Structure formats: C-alpha cells, structure tokens
Length: 84
Ligand SMILES: [Zn+2]
Image 1 (tube, rainbow, N blue to C red):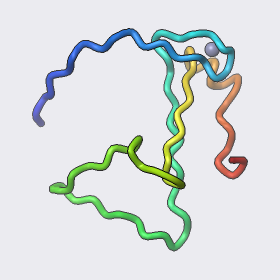
Image 2 (image 1 turned 120 degrees about the horizontal axis):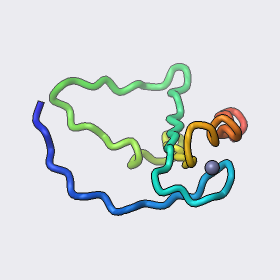
Image 3 (image 1 turned 45 degrees about the vertical axis):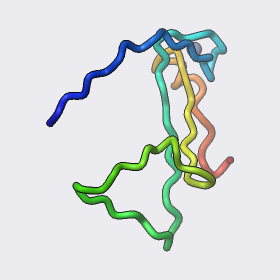
C-alpha cells in the first residue's frame, strides 16, 4: 500500500446535530442510502477508479451528521432513512 502525503488539516468546526455545540473534532456519521431492491449495483474491481461517495447525487446522496462525540450521537441519532 502506498501512503499518501496529507496536507495538514485545518481545524474544522462542525455544529453538533445533537446538542448544537461547535465540535472541533466532530464525530462524523455518514448515512449511505442502500440500493433499492433490483437496482443495478456497481461492481468494483481493483482497477476501477473509486467514486467518491460525497460526489454521488440524488438518491445516492450521502447524508452527513456531525456530533461532539459518540455520546451525542446516542442522544440524538440521525433520522432513519425511511423517515426522510
Ligand atoms: Zn454534542
């Protein structure tokens, strides 16, 4: 495995979905919509260029929720997909 050099990350503040505080090291929760039954599921092979999840549009859009930490996540979990 090649290691990629990463630029230093600036401090990112994200508003906690649970308590509303600004979290500097947010606990990030991604909801990736599952493919509906019968939908064409892309098959990935080693040589494929990976599609960035966040670039997916429409129904495949990934929802991102930020929390201070795991506890805040437990206090207010993201809505279930069927509620969206
Ligand atoms: Zn919080």
